[in-house]
Image (cartoon, rainbow, N blue to C red; front, side, top):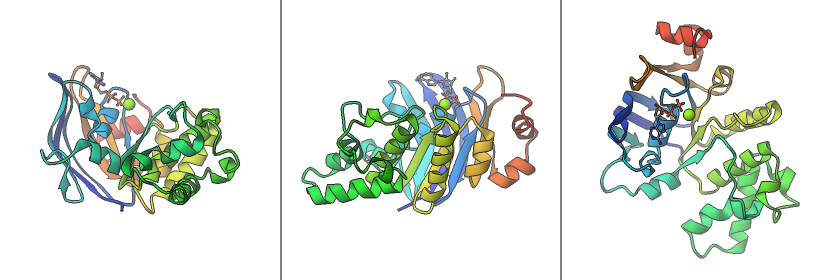
Length: 259
Ligand SMILES: Nc1ncnc2c1ncn2[C@@H]1O[C@H](COP(=O)(O)OP(=O)(O)O)[C@@H](O)[C@H]1O
Ligand SMILES: [Mg+2]
C-alpha cells in the first residue's frame, strides 16, 4: 500500500559533520517526488534517511522525524531491517546479485521474508514483478540465465522488479537512469509513471528535464556555501517549480546558471 512520508526538522550527520540541515517536507502517496540540486548538496544522503539506510555507515545519524503513514521511522521500537523491506531502494548503477539468475534475483527478497515459499507462489511473484517492471516479455524465456547477462537498462528494470517483488510501500530511486542510454532511460521513465498508481516514488535526478517529465512534486536542495550543510530550498508542485519558483536560487539553478 502506498504511503505518505512526513519529514520534520531533519538534521543528518556523518559523525560530527552536519551534511543536511533542517529538512521539512511532505511526500505524497501515489505520486512521484523528485529531488534536484547540485552535486554534494545531500540528495542521496537525505534519500537514504527515508528507509534508514543512512545509519549503516558508522557514525551516521539523524535528528528530527520521519513519519511514514503515522509510524515514526526512528522510534526505538522500530526495526530498521523491516523499514528497509517496506521502503525499497534502486541505485544509480544497476546491481543485480551477480551470481543469481534473473528468476532468483526477483525472488530473493520474498525468500528472505518467507522461508517456505511454494514454487507456484514464487513463480507468480516473479511473473507479476517482471511484468510490473516492463521486463517480462524480454526475459520470460531465459529466467534461469544470469541477471548480469542483461543489458544495463534491462538490469535496472530487473532491480526494479526485485524491489517491487516484496510489495514495498515506497520506492526510492537514486539517479536510476544516470548509467543508462536514452532509450533505456525513456523505458524507466515510462515505468515510473505506471508504478506511481501503486507506489509512492521518490527519485533523485541530476537531470532537470527528467524531474520535469516524471515528477508531481520537486524538492530543490542547495548549499549556502562550500562546507555549509545542504538544505531544502524549495518544495513545490513540479509545474510551479519549473515555471514560477518561489526562490531566486531555484530560478538560477533550473535556468542553468549554476550546478
Ligand atoms: N559516507 C559518507 N561519509 C561522510 N560524508 C559523506 C558520506 N557520503 C556523503 N557524504 C557527504 O555528505 C554531503 C552530501 O553528499 P551526497 O548526499 O552524496 O550529495 P548528492 O547526492 O546531492 O550529490 C557531501 O558533503 C558528502 O561529501
Ligand atoms: Mg547523490
